[in-house]
Image (cartoon, rainbow, N blue to C red; front, side, top):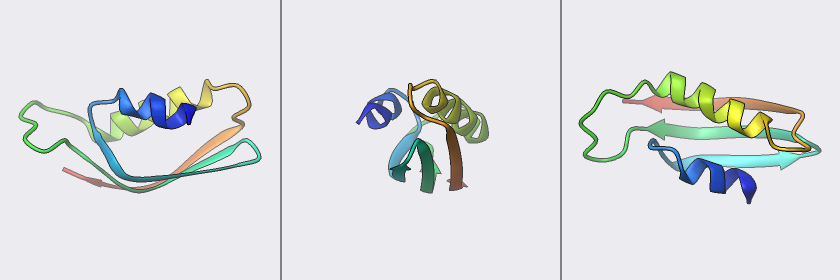
Length: 72
């Protein structure tokens, strides 16, 4: 729940990203994309790195892996 709350604050579209947590390990999978109608420049690779750093700061999280396809 904490992870979803953090991700809701990000500008990128996380609706197709699945989150799996087990024993302090978080795995992100799915598709990351720009929001529909977004005009400005957004580096989704930087957004993904930022998301991973935010998740790592949560107490009890040992590692974050991402198998995410980036569109846009």
